[in-house]
Length: 140
Image 1 (tube, rainbow, N blue to C red):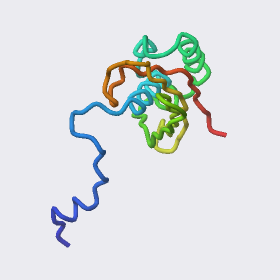
Image 2 (image 1 turned 90 degrees about the vertical axis):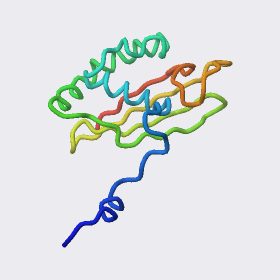
Image 3 (image 1 turned 180 degrees about the vertical axis):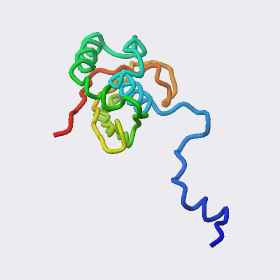
């Protein structure tokens, strides 16, 4: 059987709804950073200034409480499987992200983003958003 270019194209997943090289939407950007922190691939300081002081402390506690995430992800490339948001008010998003630590190990992250009033940044800019609540869920 001969495989044509058309066949290969139809089997590829749909392209994301953004132009190549464009930054991801803020909820995806934050989810990726949180996954990186919880799996030990990014320093906690990468969210400095973009997270409230209380949630910075909360994230510190979560990195210790979810130490198994680092161990399970070791030697693997953790990734976001799905990241969805719900607008809960003007300038507020509640986000849930399903993350894969390995091919067979799935966890969840939930967080809230709030937009600073009059931030003057575009809708896809991370600047102007602050993370105000975080939770990382273990498998039941």
